[in-house]
Image (cartoon, rainbow, N blue to C red):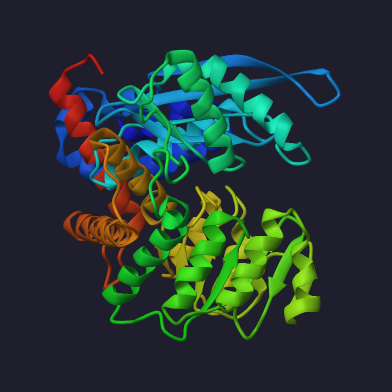
Length: 448
């Protein structure tokens, strides 16, 4: 079966899962040169096998709110592929969580994890539970209930979840406590734990910092650098603010962050003091718009950041936040580099627009792999019962992001996707990640 036929089958079978279909098509349409060069992939039906998860675990979560009322949510864990190592991927608590969203995230995670060069498989999980407006006691009860249902299916050598949207160190700590209570084991079954009880330094910063490290390598490949560049960032969460922090440290001028209510624009750029203020404001669920009365700048209600002139855009909020019209705005406003801080923040049409205009584009599976890379390093630290310093982790993170960049750039060149200096990072990253997993599956025969 050809790649195009496999895509048609997926579209027919999963018409009710648009996010998953989008992710599969994005990979499939870029790996054709690799697939054609390796007939054993077709013979072994590698693509057809990889688009179906090993298993999807679904469960009901009963928990009690502060009023003593029983609440019911749904939870899932998608264990997609353990060809290269234990399943690895975050847990997301958000009302938009569905099997389709988790399948797209898990499918992307396979190749993202493969790109790091660490022995990690791909998976994803979560619940339609909305932590917003919940008390700490309610979140604790929900996390305990969630792990009570999930714990039979995870283990340090089987499936190692991490945090994601709605799941930070607090939630991981509650889930880890329940896991220990149920299993009587102190193992590295979750990453993103607090420093001091199994967590790694630099984990909080890793995704945002890693995206900027990848950007630095992109700029270097074009004999350019980040100093003085104007940067648009969407989101005001962990990834967005740490990307802003690292870009600012390196001399860039970050002029926007945003949330679901609108965009904050500061033409002077956000220095560390301003970024720290935003972090504190968001941690207390206070309005981002309050920034204007404290530090100046402008607030644009219910708008996106892409209306401003800039050199670089880092969409770091959520999936499909950048549509084709947004991409056209980026092009019109002089953006030359787009780096995905979130998972699949550009729609398919937006990606096409960006690439057609030869804007240098780094897909999320490559650019935001820093988070899972440091999660992998946390697993190693848990296994040997030794911690590494921030400097050691940061050095390793830089190395991993450079290796991801260089391997994607080399694959783009090797398979004829680089055009007059324009590197196709999407095709390159997809081919590198796919090849590493595919080669393992061929070696295993048909049992994986």
